[in-house]
Image 1 (tube, one colour):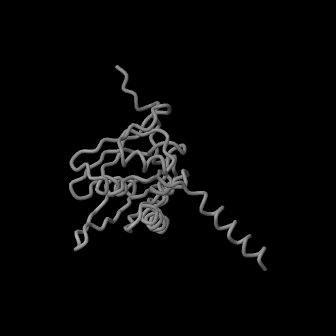
Image 2 (cartoon, rainbow, N blue to C red; image 1 turned 120 degrees about the vertical axis):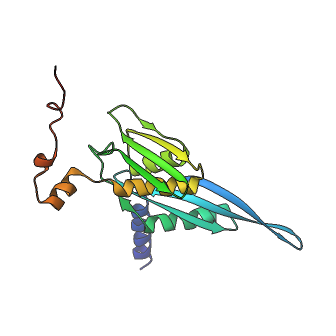
Image 3 (cartoon, rainbow, N blue to C red; image 1 turned 135 degrees about the vertical axis):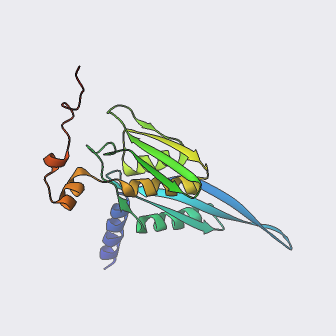
Length: 184
């Protein structure tokens, strides 16, 4: 029976190990009390499987590791699936907004890499995106930037999903990129 319990624990750890977590931001807050100050910590964590699934979470506690653990658990509960073209970039350019935070995400050719700053970079690495160009305008608050990035990624659609929604074939809705070149 003891061996059975340890096997279950090992399987759970293997299941959890498929995700990578990126600590985006830690905020230390102080509460002034009679004897001095009590410190608390708030953590923002992004979790992903590097295959198109990603989520973010927020956790608060008196200690940093406990706040990170709570945030990671919260992130695993709210995972979203992002369709990727060739498993490396976006299908189309998109904008996202949350509060005063605005982000623009652009598809990129192979070899470009992740050109994004701070919180957005953590999201792209967790989702497994290899080539993307991103720009944030407005608020640089990490919470708003991560939420704006997630709002943009939720709008991402794949040609397959558009074709099924319209009742057509993928080849009917995809342009032939070689014939789009204008010749004089």
